[in-house]
Image 1: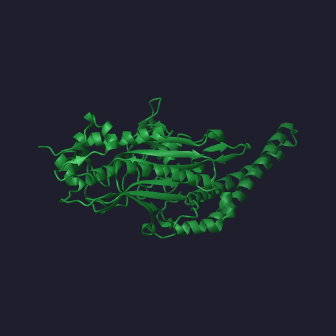
Image 2: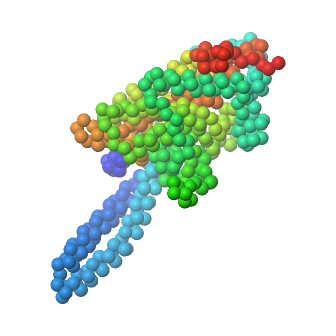
Image 3: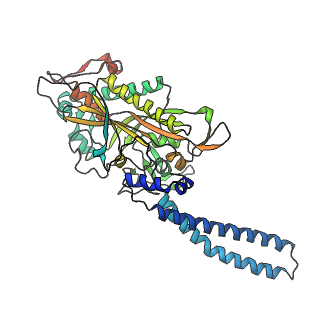
Length: 441
């Protein structure tokens, strides 16, 4: 969410950002609603001031003066009764339009209408030439008895899966490796809630509008009613997060921080849930696109400084590169173009690992800089050295998710005998420090 004063003063830049992000937004209509909203608000304030004066006069008035004052008060009350609903309607229209306003994009963001315009800006590692017929992760999972997609679909439905045996150890090793690395880098570890109120998801931009829309938002809503602390039934809507980011950032919602305590760096380990709305027909086979998985996610809250935020963004994303390199996975880096960005992003990158069985690059992480777009929604501020209150900047990065790097490890490190070599950095987390997973006899 952008400050309305910024929108008023930079309407051309906002229009350009909306155009470049393919967001249908009538900025002029928003500004006109803003004028009407302010005018009605000023009328209400004036009438309320008049009402207060009349209330004071009644206490001092004589019996002869009182009827006239009461009559005036009634007129004011009737005017308020007419204007206040009009104001509420204008305010609702204004806010519904304002939440669609996108963040401005960074100067180095490529301008293009779709993901086809994402730009490769880096690459690491050599793609392995195999001297034997390779298997994809589906066949490897079966042969090693570590992945069962058929039983997963039977129990959980489309995109369901079971990870088994050494596959569990490998996946948890990945998570522990990523989590420990972030702790060593000074990030505060957290296991955040995955069941949250709507404000955490609206605040971080995971609702496209003011409210949850099941046809648009890639989020699961719980149908079951909850109970309050007093035992009464709660009608409050609850949702499952698709990443730890909303929970980690909402931890600070409504807080006013001190500049000397910034930046705040946190890393969360969580289960993640995604309804995959709009992905019909994509990646229908295998483990690449699933409804639930684990992930280690990092977030930073920092002072409002664009140049510093870009440096921080790069440093956060470098962690993802470092992890892929230590795992021995070939990868490439994409800078995300305007048309492939969500509304709130100022700057973004994806990292993609090579997946031999799929014969393509596959996204294994992303890093986003939202500047103060999220913090305005979550109302997270800090007091700077001059005593001025400002909204913090919020950034996030995927340290490591569970499914896709799992695919990349299986497919890149498969051997002619059907076994899979465990990356060296993960072996200390494996029971017995095993070096490979072999087919079951």
